[in-house]
Image (cartoon, rainbow, N blue to C red):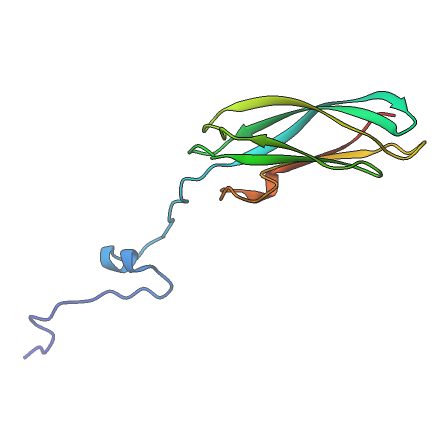
Length: 145
């Protein structure tokens, strides 16, 4: 007599999720959750007028949501080094999935004489948006001197 007759068979796959165990073994590719993905691209940096307090820099940049859902309100931080004070640009309406918005801000006056500054633009500087890729929120460029 076969002792296994009439018994249900269970399949156990080490390292698999419970969903995989319930449906059988095989490759498991859990889908990523739907999240926003904010990216920033500096499109132009223009050295502005220089006065006793330093020079200004006109910063043109695009922020895009490459994600599959809308991003809520967030801030954009712009900083120049050496010698500039950072500025913050709020985006109170957030950014819908798949959309791109162009901005222009003036940084300065600041800087150090005869030193070309580097400008950093950081989307979601307050880290309030959970994103599918948090590593593409920053763009840095040297200002043409």
